[in-house]
Length: 265
Image (cartoon, rainbow, N blue to C red; front, top):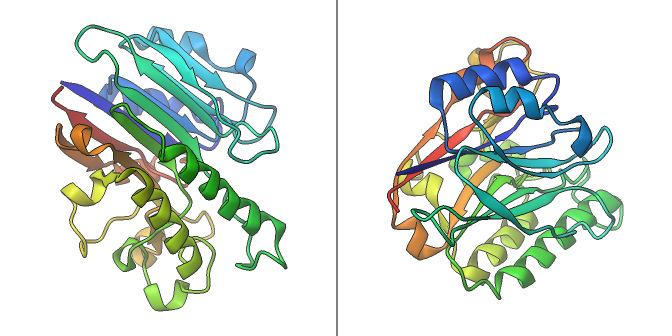
């Protein structure tokens, strides 16, 4: 068995106490973090080692973005793509190397949010987000290994992935153009959406709630921005998937919550 978690942590050093709490409660074999907001030399390696994580792949930058994959099982750096095409640290890929899971690829990605205006001409950030997905799509066309891609995609594609489909149709993260662009990425490799395999549409499934909401539980204005997608052969080996929504209520939380998928490999 192998358990893999993904979590946009929104500063790993600031939120190390809740990362530690999550690890002690769930103990995933691999944890993929996005938005670590630190350079590699600033990453809290010793805190993770004290929790049993000895393997690291870090792609960081000062103060912004950044991704990290940590593991109790061994892996090697496999890929580091600049799908933003501007040097930002938004991706790291690893290949598992232990005999039980050898050859499985885990790609960890933080897709740009895309700004506030869903128009390429008026908002450069929105165009960068669409271009990011197009570069990912070309990459996915050539995948020939069992691959899991996880992270903050910053798109909630289904109507049941948002608190109000009607009210969010013109809001960045749920616009038809973003959904269509994400679908092209899915089709390029034939990815299986593991989350929706285990929590079928139209069941409620959110992974992010804005800090601006005064009463998150009462309003429940969530979106499913975080995803775990797998190659078809790997997806068939997924035995469970869980959304750890309670972490949104911990002290000094991230605005995202962790997801875990278990595999029988």
